[in-house]
Length: 163
Image 1 (cartoon, rainbow, N blue to C red):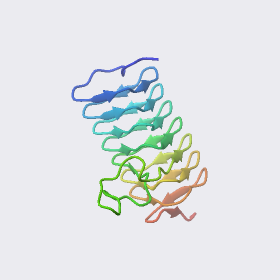
Image 2: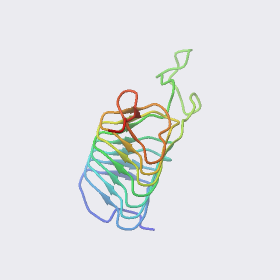
Image 3: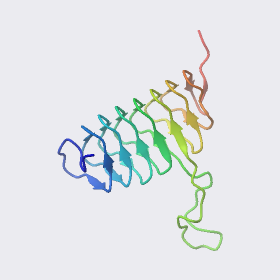
Image 4: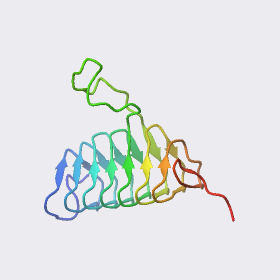
């Protein structure tokens, strides 16, 4: 396994990343303690946090945020500015006013199955599964599981009616 991306680009933070073959990572991206599969492309201004994984032949468009606990399977498209959330009750401090640590919250795992597409600006809340080949419309807020081969749109994301 390579220890760096296939391309050169300035202003990247890459720390303890497991890369597959021929991965492209553009400028101003932050990747740390995650896994990126072969032939995937990571756009500018993308952050992938520790413990997240991205499969093979994925495209992660610019300005997207992939937090800990997110698993993206192979051949997934993530549009510009897609955000994942992994905490149901986010707070800066505990009830005692002490800054929260890694032990003060519950990580919600999220899976995006093979071939799914997430439109630009979509928000995916923690603990959901987006099925294989599903399409999440631009700007949708995914609050529950999405079945394979389904199109969802809106806030909250709901199955699109058939015309």
